[in-house]
Length: 425
Image (cartoon, rainbow, N blue to C red; front, side):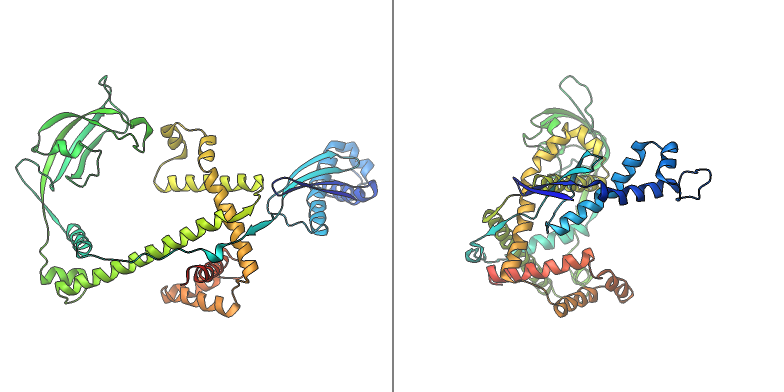
């Protein structure tokens, strides 16, 4: 077997492989045997007919094609192992000739990675503050969730809950798609609708109709409506006054699960807000550290890997849309984008993901950041303990060797160790 290994730009190599006629015989024999097991040849048991008899029933091209299907994966695997090539993607294989069998395989290999200076990064922690206003805001939100609505016969005002029928029309008076709704609930002042819409409802009574114009923002998420003037025709179906519950002993007991005073409830809210703020600050520092690591990393990312990462990101988008009840085709029609546009928009993120992945692997290796078996088992038990007893046995089995869950947990422990080193926590 003749093998030539040629380094290509962007961490790829091209393998040129050629077999001798003698080396090809075992693959021809294997292909012949497998095909003859599926083809009935008079006078021979399945799989026992010689090549010259089989060729009378099956074309040379068919036999050669099956031989290639058998030979190429095996030959490629042997060469990669023998040459100690660290492949990181599926190969692109081109069969140049059949007799003798000659092929070229282009494959991405593990790139050279250099990361320096991350040990010296300084990302100071910001002081976490929770104000009385923050606590009162949360308490008000809790009250709103338990609020009752009482229908009133008066003009709507800010803070009321109204139900409206509406439909949008363009400047020519034609109805616009996705601008129609019936019995649509709106709490005036919460700014859930486009600016100007809720304000136009103030002063309207039940069964009253009105026509008004609003201009959509220039950065509106739906491009079709950006900076567009739309005429809305609305009818108020109901006006309700929101009755907030009193912060009495009964209500405080209901939301706290015990006999707690208002001060005690506020203290619990304050502690929860502080804990959440501390976590958000932790995430901010970690994300900033990762961004700096990306900038400190020198690596040539193989184009094949970039395309594979973009493929994965497109799958993520489709799954996200499906979870929201939106088909991918509908999304493409609404945004008026091509697949290439979506991939181009995500190219930088795909590159950063790959750079960070290789950078972290390099850092773990050069800093000796590893996870011991006892350490991993201890973390598994901690995770499992958070679930009901009936689910714990099944969950332990899911953390089997080589599983995605186990790799993810191991990586999390490594990341925690890295952040502790560079962020001092």
